[in-house]
Picture 1: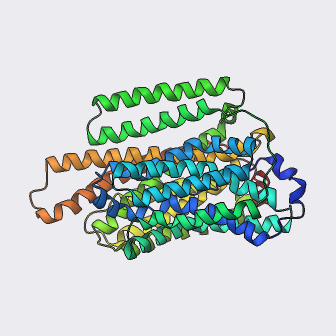
Picture 2: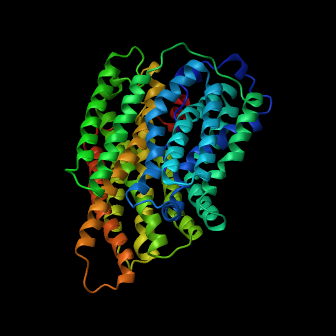
Picture 3: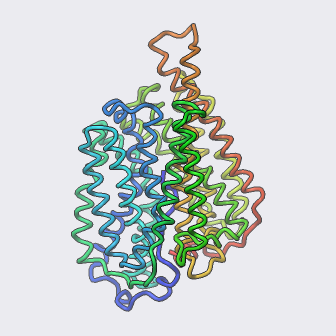
Length: 502
């Protein structure tokens, strides 16, 4: 689930927008609609597939562990190439790269909808992530380019924020409706008409941004993305086979080598996609680490519960989609509370409370069994996790850019999104590994008093509970991060900081 805003324009773009932006676009409503719909597509695709996972698994013969790649293929390429996508926009023009990203995303959606097998579906999801990485940095950046500072930009930012906040919930509902009424393939087909419309209308109604000369850090992007993909694959393979399996060992060794090479590349690159000096701030680094583990829990919760409510509780896809709305609404409500009271309360109390609530929610979910009901077993922990995520993420959006030099503002604001996407993929891989190992052990030693017809539900329940226990342990890392991080000053108007940075 995407919980933070997408990468954005730098401080320079906000402070000195092009002269053409001073009067605003000729058709501001259409301009804003184009940008908002693109943002909605990107947010939707982080969640719209979740409810369709059981149907995808049956139609394309995915194993339980391989199914997680339907989510991870998107998250890894999106998060891994996000910073590079922003650099492409700076150098080549944000509108041009925005359109290229939308077209790639749309083509990949078509491939995902017509695919006859799992391999092509995973390729389509990876290409969707690449398209999103190219298009996403242009959404807020083009608002800065096209809307003059003041009421026009504030209104545009408000619409953008509303789309971002509601997109996750809408994705779950829409995914359930499309899967139930048509088929899972429509969670991909739905992007096509909107993508084509955006690509056609953007050149006419959206102004291009000023280009900034620079270099592409392709080697940094490739080593980081490939390294994380191999690390995730190593975890998943360990769960389905063993930790001593040759493929598992090779993946982990290669991942370490590639990620080490990425660090070397970034220290030597003239214009690195990730300036390592951003990690000199102790508290920012600690709290981003907390977010890494927190986002993994959110991804794991949606992955396992979408299967649990449909396979064990026998929810229809539509009912499953609406069943997850409390999480999104709780997160949005918590974010509103934080924005109003953050200057008085400070960031640390909110972030610490948020991490504790997520941990408590995961412990509660770990009590699930095949007889659990929605109101007694799922509703409460989902609300806790939603509130906790809102309490943690909103202050982190501000801390991520606090005290950052102007030239690093874009990278700093994008870094949180990279951490969120990569953390989702890595955390889900760890939880899927635990799930697979638990199911394997349970299958080898099945309960003697269980009817054969009830055994699949039993396996899903036991495996999910084990994954949630580990998730609670991972969430404790976020609690520690909240404890050891020092208090940070927060401006009287946090929204002004976010607007200025984006």
